[in-house]
Amino acid sequence: MEESKKLDLRKSRKVNMDNRLIIARYSRELSLLGQKLIRIAIASIDSVEDRDFILFETTTKDLRRFLGIPMDNIYRDIKNAAPRILETKIAIQEIGTKEGDYEYWNLFSKFIYKDGHITIKFSPDVKNLLLQLKSQFTSIKLENLLFLNHKYSIRVYELVCLKLHGSKVYADKHKEIEISVAELRRVTGTEDTYRQINHLLKRVIEPAVEDIETYAALHLDIQTGKRYGREIISYRIDVWSVIGWRNRNTEQLPGQMSVEDIGNPVYVTD
Image (cartoon, rainbow, N blue to C red):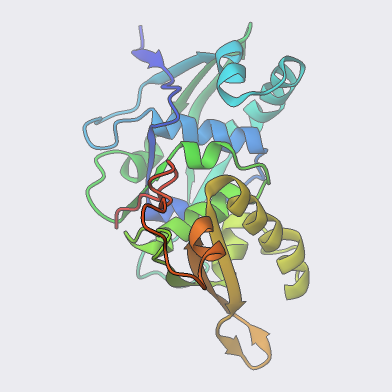
């Protein structure tokens, strides 16, 4: 009988991913529940010690309780998410290859949903993206992802964490990063939609940024970055803690709490 264990439903777990997975293109648009279920499964892996994937199991009842989803919705949402998750491929661009050259890998090899029980298993294709991680990976607290409510927020947040390259933002410390429009389009699956940059900003970037500020305690101050002629090709983003942004014109008071103090630090390993 194939080895299995329960999904680790603890919000304190870390989601550890090779950086190539964070900037990968997904072949299918996934629901918010589907995206969260994938992150819960990744957080259940021991990315340092595990050498192979095993089956993960949970129930809709436990998942509903963990995510706070109404009972009537969970069965419908899992039923709809299951085939899309199983069919999803990721497009990886290896370092040194030209733009547009991708390798397409299956993310999962198994997804069974029966009588309120969920069984999933990652594909062997992605072993080098999730197992035995030693460098060039990003680690994010699962809790920081679970409360996000917009369909683009999770992947934008993960991209921001990657770009921070190990930095943490506190009430008195912020950092500027740069993200290309091409990267934003790739992770949000909008390479062929919202072609006008103002539409991309209003429909994709701004809702994600607002969601991240509300539920992940980061303020992203977005400014135009590089241009090619009149075309915007990147954004400069000043990343602050929400507390730091609100108090940026005042000195930090003695004893003032940082983002880490209130339980929402950003953990990144480069």
